[in-house]
Length: 130
View 1 (cartoon, rainbow, N blue to C red):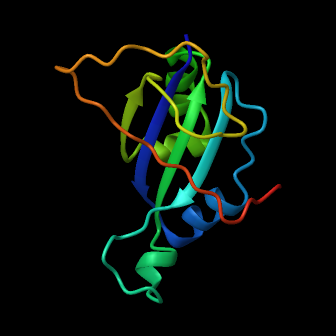
View 2 (cartoon, rainbow, N blue to C red):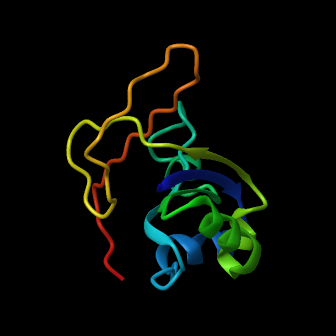
View 3 (cartoon, rainbow, N blue to C red):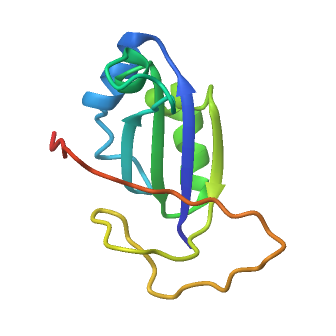
């Protein structure tokens, strides 16, 4: 069963820039798809650097299974940097709209009201194809 992971990590300017614009994650075992972006500080001025690029990155990925995610965080050079931050492991529940790149299951799960839920909103204004 595939899982999703959502990571937040603050890096040096150089590392954050390199991971966002030149991630080189095409041949990672078990990685189905990923999106890497700069975290935005809500409420900050539209033209401030904290809103556009503040060294904190978001790494959202789908994995074939949890073992591949663990391997990535322990043995990959980018994974080791990402592992220094915070992350949550997620299971697919449902989707609204269309998402390219990810392999979204067709079977939706029933929401259990006693369990916490995380909603991830993906928006692509510019798509980088490296």
